[in-house]
Length: 235
Image (cartoon, rainbow, N blue to C red; front, side):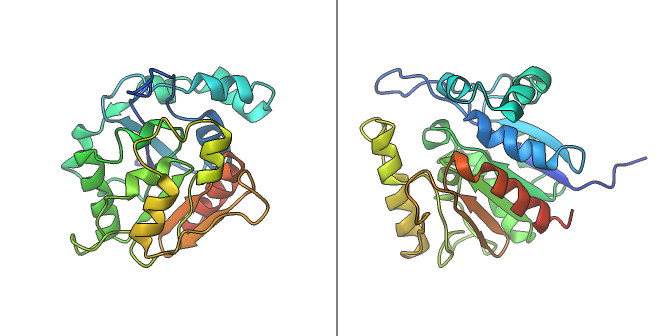
C-alpha cells in the first residue's frame, strides 16, 4: 500500500572543496539534521545530489556541532541519507510529480554547483508550476537564484521576501574571499530589494515564508525551517 505521508525531495551539494583554495566544504550538518528531526516519521524523504552517491558533509560543521544531541543522533543513525543519494538527472524528467516539497540544506557547496545545476533548476520550476513547497536554508537559497517561477520566465524570487547567509556572517567565518559572489547581494537583487535578516545579528534565527517559498538565514534557523515546512505540508 502506498504511503500517504507527504514526500520531500532533499537536494544536497556534490561539492566538497572551494575551487579556488581547496578549503573543505559540503552541506552543513545541523541544516539537515534539525529539519530531519522535526519531520522524521511524518514524511517520506528522497535524497538527491548532482553527482549521486555520497554527498560531502562539511567537516567543520561536524566539529562545531559535535555536542549537539540531534546532530549526533543524525550522524550515528541516518548516514544512508547522504551516502546513498540519487543523481538529480534521474529525477529531472519526472519533475515534481512524485513530491510535495523540495528542500535545499545549506553549507557552502550549493554556491558552486546547485546555483547553476540544470536538473535542479528544472525541478524547482516544476515545483513552482505545480504550486508545491520550495524550501532552502543558509546557502541553500543559492539554488533558487537562477530558478524560474511557474511561467518559466519570471525569476522565482522576484518580489518575494527572502533570507539566506549574510555578508556579515560570511566575513565572520572568513569565507567572503572564497566565494564567487555574495549570496546576500544576489538574493537582494533577484528579489527586488526584499532580502531580510535577523535583527539580533548574523547568527540570529530568521525564517521567511513567502507564499510556497520558505527560506532560512543560517544554522540557527534550521529547526524553524523544518517547522515551517511541516506547517506548509499540513502535518
